[in-house]
Image (cartoon, rainbow, N blue to C red; front, top):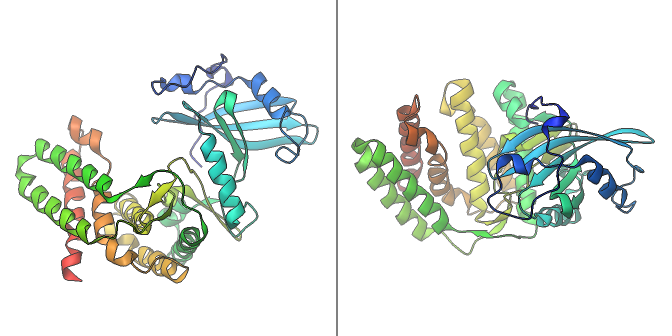
Length: 348
């Protein structure tokens, strides 16, 4: 879980939610009326809310996201004591998230399963609030960053098994994130890098040509259910369970997309915390092999160079635009890693 931001409860707006609007300011998204929350929960059927009538609520802001939405820790007291949940408030109606999480529960990813997601308690439309269980455990990110080699290996295998099972069992839903979308994103980032440093123009041109040629060989019709942000900080490991959080970006995509996202995220974590992009390569290899052995699509390895290349071009946009400290080093790493991955197609 993210570290809480220690604001008093009075920090939260007490007024009613404004109408659905894509132009909410970040603070407008933090509107949570605690009295209304208690009343709305009191109306839920016992099948959704088995803990009795809420008598008191404590709300703490955990994270304000730029999308915009924000995440709260919500403690509710009933006659049986305090119960802790995670609440996510959105600027627009996201009842679809509750439906997707319920669908995953029915597909075999319920909170009691070895491979699971948090239990979605309810979606409260009047508050744009998704209420879900809080999962207590160890973040996979902490294990990869601080754990011993054996712990990292076990974690990588568990993450691979979860993703293989998910792609095999989950019904696809949401928008389709096609190949053209990733190519367009890569073109925008290469253009930004060239504007910042003309000396990289030839590398950017070479990279884009290789990406376009690679995209032609990919099967655009090969898709499955997608998480959209499958990486180590979205995964919690408990005793006997692997739990994947945050379904805001669920979609339909090529099976290699989520695999590549996880591996590139590991490589970036290795660079940032362990001093070398290659420091977690053995964990990444175990993740991929376990994924393939757990029902993962056999065509994924052939598509990985393309998707890893485009993911290495993601992020750092503001740093490059504003010429923030170390922007040049960051941009060069992005460009070189992207090129290194896409040229693996020619070597294999």
